[in-house]
Length: 289
Image (tube, rainbow, N blue to C red):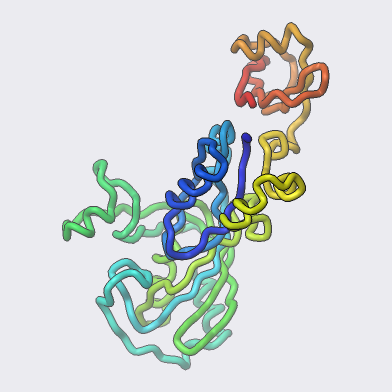
């Protein structure tokens, strides 16, 4: 089994927990392309078997989240897990649809964002949250991100729910904090759901229980398992004869006067072999299933 399964991660478990459970179910090597906070839910693409080699094609994807900000309190972690360190009155008159849309518009575009101290980013080989837990100060450098759109979903007292489309590397906890500051108060992220990562949408995600229950159901797996062949379905097909295929599989680069990109490789019987890449008119193996 080589490819991708998109899991709908539940709240209260780490991405590593999900990888471990799926590994036990499938009895295959499993990896992921980016963690979700334990209290976040939603889209978590998992790479299965030789699908782990797809990671480099999945790291620059834009993402869509739906988040809820709790206004009036700020925590150490900028989410529900942390201790309250600040409290400030919330002016409910500012929480109108018109004003919130105006505030959201100020965040659209390219910008620099300072990641939260409770994050897995490494500084001098040590994760930021380790500095935080040890009470150590560390300089956190801003990172370039881009916010493409923010849409207001709901206003409920001092809680605001919104959906944001953003670039890789955006911290929604920091965005929640910054939005609260624009509203002249403080706040933290109460809930977070990742709705989309690149081409993977929440509607295509399944739960761990659904995977375990239907692992031997062909129709279910055909629908939700994304094979390497399916992942690259938009790439052109290239058939190799027996001699060419043997050379290709043994790592020999084959001369091909074709455009430089990825190709789906097939044998003369139309069996999918894997992915090849053309560079300088030479075809070389990239992923073999």
